[in-house]
Length: 183
Image 1 (cartoon, helix red, strand yellow):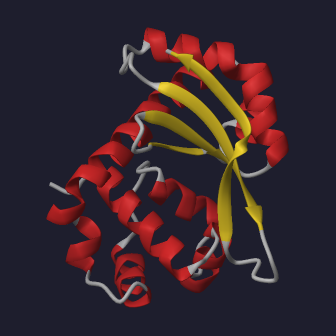
Image 2 (cartoon, one colour):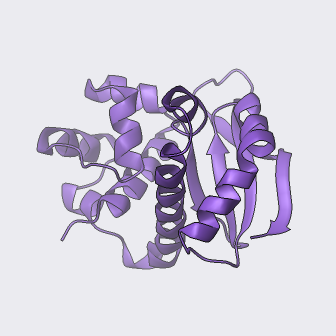
């Protein structure tokens, strides 16, 4: 059976290797950046035409896009755990805040668990990272507690920022906002 989260991680990795934004990949495939975001979060799968085009872009095969690779299994598992945890948090929070706030502050985010066991929430802007940290940390912690996910996580908010002349590359800065409290 095909796991949408595995496919999403493979698409995310391929996109990052090409140095493309979600909009850039969407333009190449003639789909919206929202569709790319949903694929990467494992909310849905691309149609067969998009899978074939993705495989060509990533110099890969459709089969490689649909399945996790053995050598990356440990990394994928951590990323999947983070993606699944964040999806649960997002679903819990979506029921408790206004839809415009949810779309603005939670919609354009992704999460993964890094090598230190921290849940890293990737935000699009420094403002979004600051806002999630200052305004929504208590709700995120409550969601993590009530959805009964891993209790050994640390939570950190980071943001992407363009650097240099190459606006297609992004780096994730962790020096802006951090929460050093175990949850």
